[in-house]
Length: 65
Image (cartoon, rainbow, N blue to C red; front, side, top):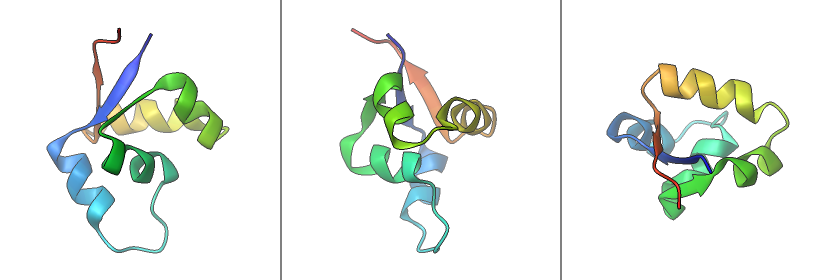
């Protein structure tokens, strides 16, 4: 199971007060980690966005249980 967490840079982006924040980053900020299945339920384009966030250094994949 793939589990994702915010990086230090991702936490900075998630805290910034902008009107067009991503729901995926907002979900991960208070909860620390979330499995891929949970993130897909939030957004239909979650896979594409997660790949972009990982490449951009905002998210990291952590070992799942």
